[in-house]
Length: 485
Image 1: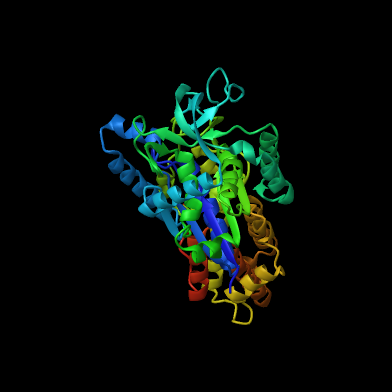
Image 2: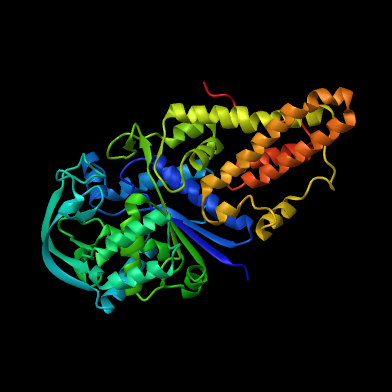
């Protein structure tokens, strides 16, 4: 039986169109999923949309449509982006799916049976952008630093609460026993410090009369399950919990990886893990925390309105060009800057003039002179993959540790090496003076491109396929990338 690997993104909140931050998370998850499949793992890749909560309800009201019609429209837009980015997801879950809602209610009951849910009256400061209560220490000038354009609201009502305060010691032990539980290490230290300061119980319901759009609290129709509690359950409802325990245990007992942005650190690595413990379920194995994409020094955000539309870049430059940028020009774990100028510079330097130029020069030279590796010289794709799996080839070693950027950097070192070899040996001139030497050079370079194409499969799958097909057909290549103006 194959080893299992389960990976899930967070679920994008459908209160606006998809933006580059969503594309980043989709692409990083897809690279990891494709990598694990190529290593021979049995992979399940989950993503979807988060469709409950006050922001969505208010947005639908604002534009005068039913909330159901609103979420249907936006869910389809996220699905379309996945297709345009060539994302290889195995499941697209919506929190409005009947099966998910039933799972969320079953999960509530498990936490309730554990004695971790109670009702009380409370008054709290609340950020609609985060859909979270905020303490004074988390606010700057009485504003949420993540959503400075939104006013902090005061909530005063009777809600159900989760006994988060019961889980301080258990969470600290989880972090201590599992040093790779949260990556990067800096984010693990950050969440550990948060938990060490003490945990406050948090609200997990809203009054239906104020917020009717959501999953009903089991046994109390006057309350709706809080959006965070509901949405987090998708990670297990997507793999069969609680109705198909065999399916659930297959995926949850193997390697489980969640990808989330740094503004989700608390929810993913503390709140959700405490909820899992309460329900009697094992924690996630690893949580990857990525940074923000900044525009002009500010976090790119729907609420701030400073977004770059990934679909426009895909339309102009292709999915693999954007996948390249999000893989190599964006730090795997920290904040990164993006502008269209920076995108075009990277595209021209490393795709049009880099990889694309190398492929064009080498394969045109091979085709015009009919010099191609024979079967003994060109290793099979399967052999290259087996060497990567065994560790004989270390190109993907950093990807085994989920460091996407360092891995693709290594691939570009090979590309630069081939460029340097061509500049030094000049096989295009040597073909007349030393045909045997030029033949050896060309065969070596074609074999190198073959290797590079396999290495690129998780990152730029269409580009990798084009290179491989051109080599198999012994033909002059079509240009991979046209220079950006």
